[in-house]
Image (cartoon, rainbow, N blue to C red; front, side, top):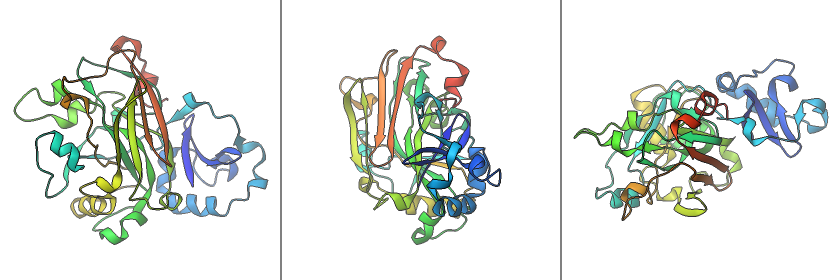
Length: 296
């Protein structure tokens, strides 16, 4: 199944188009994407039994990309992993971590899969990532059961201002990666059963058409089940929460010479089988609050 946020309403993506979940169920299921994760078992049971012939006017056939918002627009918690690909740890001059290296991103950085990203400075870097969206509460979950607590996965970027990140001896991961628009997601949430092997997905990103990152999630140091199990041993994971699972090698700051995003650059990010995002970088005054806070 594929779900999304179309103009602020939760939709099911089908061959016919986007099905408005609340309209199709006469309000029995929520229109608000954030509330849909709280009712995840009900949502997936309805979608599994859906007869497309009964949909009628609740299908949007022409989906405007600029109307797609982040699949989980108001997560209560946003986690991210550092150095979760050995090649990225290597290019950083560091060993792969012995345990998941976790930091947090702030929810106001969440944005949609298409539109603009305002660059607060001259050292903003790209980091394509597979993002996990929690669908069922998870506490003390075994790795073998972890995927059952995942609503699905989506494409993400963990955009990073490197000057803010490394301004002092103690890196400011959370602040440097939480400017408005620095956590774009989308275009769709894809449930694990749609993906064949959800632990083996191809991901990458390009700047102005040039591929700068390419990898497979089999290269992760800690894969999704281990990450979910690790986090759930510490605190409850809640429906709609996001987990950015780490980026592979190829970030701009570690190139020779370093390379960063500039106004006018087009950043394309993808996970094969999940979808593709596209963002145009702008100077700060060129963006709007709608772009920055997930309207697109």
